[in-house]
Length: 208
Image (cartoon, rainbow, N blue to C red):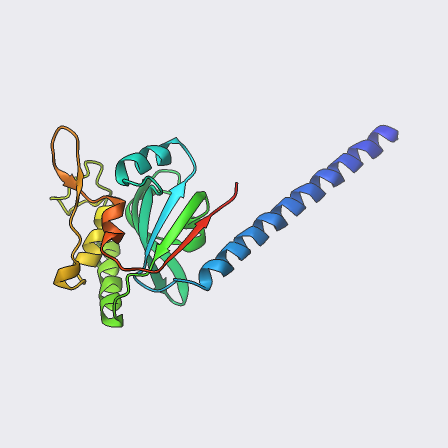
């Protein structure tokens, strides 16, 4: 009898702790979402993130001079819902190329992120939105070769740069400054995307 009571007590305690953990996680997500909502969630704005894990540490070392972030996307608003459009290869999510992902899912495993205001007029933002939709409809695959000259496949910063360059004024066009070892070919750094943007910025470090 005493053994059964202990088993029941343990099961109840486990369920209670698990429920509290779920509530805490949900509360954390809601607070995070609320803080972003009050800032720069505008169609066309640039979002950068740093994920947890070895691959993210590797990519931030080659994709950014200041090594703050490892991936990028564009805020994409559709049906009053916040998305991030980006190009990524991730087999766990069945991603291979240009996708749109719910904002919270995009930031789910992030250590830090930043949102940059591109400070462009509404007509340019509408053009960026249209460019994103075209790439989504074409289902452009991810460019594993990081070949900026070939736009039939796109890596993350290349996708963002193309969407912006198709719509930005001539004096705001983004040029690639990264250099691929051995070949000398140029590729778009994350820094290239915001270097010419006289932007306000929202940064957030997310606790473990």
